[in-house]
Length: 226
Image 1 (cartoon, rainbow, N blue to C red):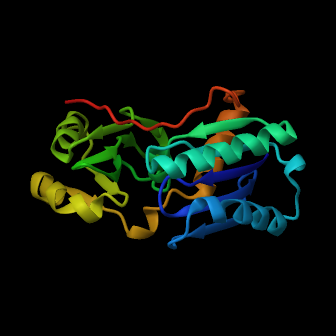
Image 2 (cartoon, one colour; image 1 turned 60 degrees about the vertical axis):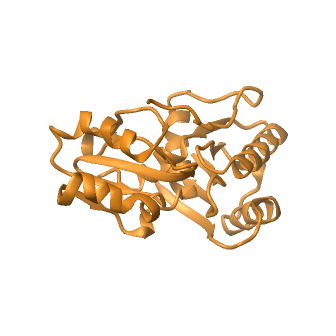
């Protein structure tokens, strides 16, 4: 399956093309420039690198957040327009899940966190390794409340790894509360890569699970557990 993966939910915009298990091309930028001006050129570049046209895609996967409200809207609107124009399926993928997927083979707990501002983080909890699965919904919480939620899942999982740009602001709090029992991923894994979005989208499409052009909406997640 040739799947285009797009994420614009963080300042790092990423577009990738996969063909089955192969990453054909990927374009990722972390620069001060609006997604509105760089997304379509990035998509065009990736498709040209892959030597295909939009009508030969099997579908498109788009990061729906949580993250930047404006960035998410731009990405979803662009992906919807593209898929509608060439009559291809579309799938919305959690940005947090895409970040966690970068570490999916970690045998233990994977916690992606993003800075949500307002003294809150976007976060979720996954179990990595051969039994990869989600343990919580995407949440928007103060870091202390998120760590309380996390404690429900780590007692039987000796390995816990955090990943995401939220570590720059809240890493010291995580370390103070959880000590040396947790690990922080290298910053290279913090990126919601277009390739990860595409892979997750391909998995859903193979199961016949797609979204509607009309009903796919941003995953803003501003209300969590308190």
